[in-house]
Length: 263
Image (cartoon, rainbow, N blue to C red):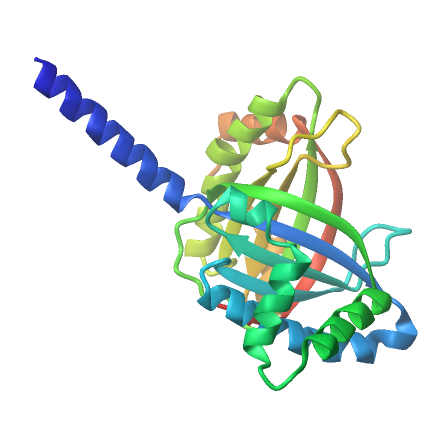
């Protein structure tokens, strides 16, 4: 009896460990750049891509993206967003350590002195305004094999769960909206979808609590997807959709194009 209980506990711990390893953590950074210094920033992003390539090789991250933004909120004219991917929440929280970034840069650019590297980072800070940083954990995603590539389109939809309906909203995304996106993918109207929750606890005044990433291969697919209507949906399913929509407030949407990536 004791042996069987021990084996059951061992299997449970292993399965929990495997599940934890599969969890993905993402850091979104929304960036404003002075219009007169956009060229300088674009030079810096090539430098930064090499730095994150080294971070990937060192096992600190699992990927990095730079997206240009075409739309957003009035009064918050972000031109770019970066996404850094992690498989561990501790690595995520330590991912913006400047000393570690400098060390990765020294490995990526052995011909540059530490003074030159530090100067490059200082110039970048002067050229950009890192206005918003969101630490997110992936809650659900579509079952697909799409590989991101430069030119990929996405909409970043930032949501705030209605107070008192946090669990109801997450259930709606997993059980109501996820199947809809799976249908779109099978119909060739979408490539990938992710549902993310803010990983760092926030209070009731937070601007958003969740985000969805809706990913498309091109603008034709994007606009066709906007016209999609599930003709097979039952009245009960439509009621569940309406209920799900009422459990969250869509704060704002960014349409983005993937400019460069590290995998």
